[in-house]
Image 1 (cartoon, rainbow, N blue to C red):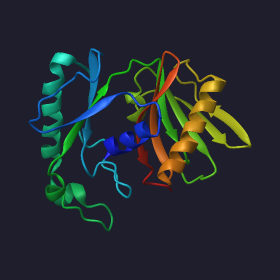
Image 2 (cartoon, rainbow, N blue to C red):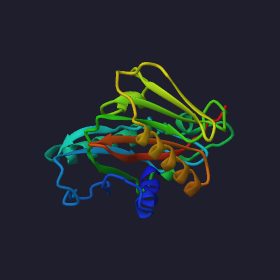
Image 3 (cartoon, rainbow, N blue to C red):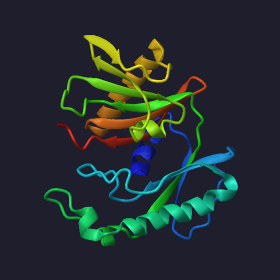
Image 4 (cartoon, one colour):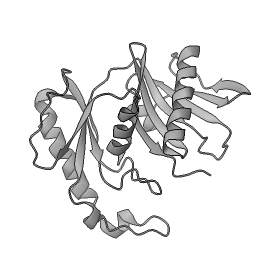
Length: 221
């Protein structure tokens, strides 16, 4: 589950926006943050497992005002139920998950909403199978369209100790040298922490880099 990864990162001092987990029918307490808007994200138990990823199959609500958070939480829980087409959704290669059993005691993640100038995804290994290369895919603003591959992006390819090059024109926004260095350093540290290649969503708000999610890369060509 993505929240477990975030909890580990937070414990290790990584820059993670504050968040809480809520169970179904639990009262939502937003006193952990003074922000007026939140991201309400799925945290289904099998969603970002080490071997199989169900990322993107469940609902996420962004820019949710405080008074609408409970409504958004209910909608995310409803998306779990709507996705429990057990064998059709769960069969991945040789593995068969019983999602009905795993769907007990699920939670939803409520995270402080950032309004970044730029955001994107860092792959600590190129998903195309180039294991000596790190890749950063950068977009403007929230970055949700970057993750969904719906926006023009700027891509950085980094071979540690050798070279760095970029491709694409993006939206006219790029990363400063110190931002790139910080991202690559964070990527190295997170990969070492979890002992596997990682797919890391990040955002940069007012010059500070935040880690929004971190999951194992489940497909290396």
